[in-house]
Length: 113
Length: 111
Image 1 (cartoon, rainbow over the protein chains, first blue to last red):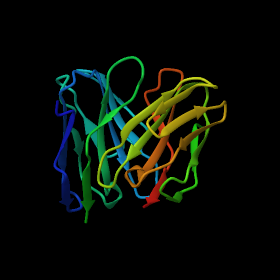
Image 2: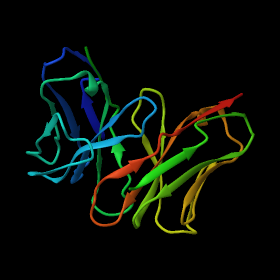
Image 3: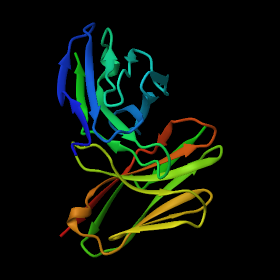
């Protein structure tokens, strides 16, 4: 099992550009999440999905969009990149029910210049 | 507002020197408290979930405990490979999928 796979691992964007961060899981997990991690801060939830076709906003959704057309994939779209979006982005998934532990991907380090 | 505070921010131990990490939390109805380990450049790795006060979980040299206001991660006779950042998170009841994460404790174990 590959678990949760994120691509790319690193990316530099110019202000105003757009990009999609890819996330795929092969564990048949219904629940998927996008978090961002800023230096010295706790992870913050951006968006989540409880199943194909269902998405909802987290704590810091502004500037981002998501879609969930399949169980496996949960891409995160950045429109009009801003320096405030410089961060490490983690995708995670979990199976419905206890013990609620997430499986995280290895992250995408994004720099907006 | 749900909050998680971890202390200390950083901890240096000698190999074999046992210690504890603290996670204090305030949440409107605890759905679960979670401990994760994060190595540099990697995503967090799930360690434990605790659901109610008095509960304890163990894994190798790690033992997590929970009270109504805090959780401790006890590390017994640590080894250098236990060096990592340990993250604590809480989930609240009420259907929210959001986990509130602390800033973490960076543990360094010297040989």
